[in-house]
Length: 443
Ligand code: FAD
Image (cartoon, rainbow, N blue to C red):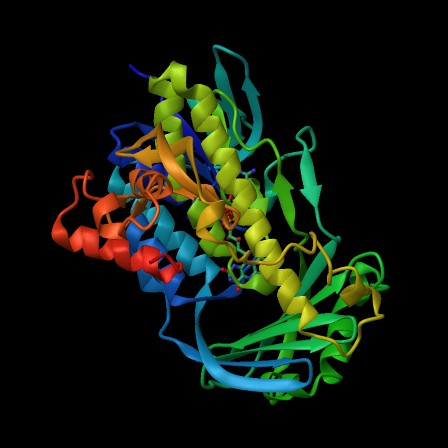
């Protein structure tokens, strides 16, 4: 019997990789443990579509209808947006059911160790039913998807300022679901309230400079801090804090070695972004959706191992920097406390490179780069620009590299139409391409 691919962790990333691998015909064993704390997170429609596209069904039933989101940043309030609040316990339970429905072997347990060399992969774990017994599973390939809990001390990483989010639970009467994000001099708050009256009040601080108290005093610290934030009042009204706050590390971390010949890291295990971007689940899904094609190539096409690894690492790096810069730009919009350590250390991290670089057609180049095609990583000619360093392969189904090469070779005063005449394009495709070229100022 073939050894399975072993997926560690069953959050959105581990779940999406497992479903993708099953669709490619692989046998998959998932070892997962429910997260030890409850949390509510806010997601956009893009995440809902991502979850649907990944093949989740039951997980989608955990997603609520959009509710009002108020943001107060740089002293200005905006209530134009909505977000969908999700209970992570319910989402993760739905993901677990989806994995079982799809035919993954699901083992409820805590992974305690991984041993891997060129020929063997042994994963050890313990279950709640036999907590003193260590069990071992052998596999053919390892997917590390344990989120921020995935061990990474031996790998090269790039970290932003150390950041912590303190989540305090409150309970009050039933209320209209809503959320709010607010900046303050030493950080920012995200607060959510569900119809059942549960409130999730989350304060994010800089670890080095926030002077956080010992654990026993955290509850009082959070309550006192929240009382100084006027926008927190509706979330605290007629409500009481319950239990101890839960501290979640929220430091941005990029794992600069996210793939090997027989292992891959996805989701937060590969790169975790600042929760300010509100895109954690989106980025976790993004790195996970491409992973089955990478794994398939690593296992079946040894001659393309380097290509597949380059593909995964370059996507992980690009996603990380994109969201890190989105976060930086958002931090820069807050100018009331420029000299305070929290804001000062985030205004220019990870760099000052703009989110988008204006480009002209002269800067377009054609390069051979890794791309995904039908569950494999292959090399293809793509169009690379300063703004799109990973390359653009297709535009609405039309291969762009031949188009760019033809235009670069066109004779003086030759019409666009005629320099494209040798390419096999349908009239509608030719019109779309000319429209795209004209959009860049070519005549
Ligand atoms: P996870 O969802 O963390 O899944 C990892 C799984 O592995 C978990 O089920 C865990 O229990 C399991 N696991 C861990 N260790 C073991 C072990 N030893 N054995 C077995 N199983 C194990 N994202 C948003 O989109 N919107 C938000 O509002 C938002 N708010 C956030 C607020 C904070 C404070 C933080 C820190 C993050 C927030 N995120 C948000 C980010 C989001 O939570 C993550 O990016 C996303 O869950 C990552 O998915 P994942 O599958 O990679 O990891």
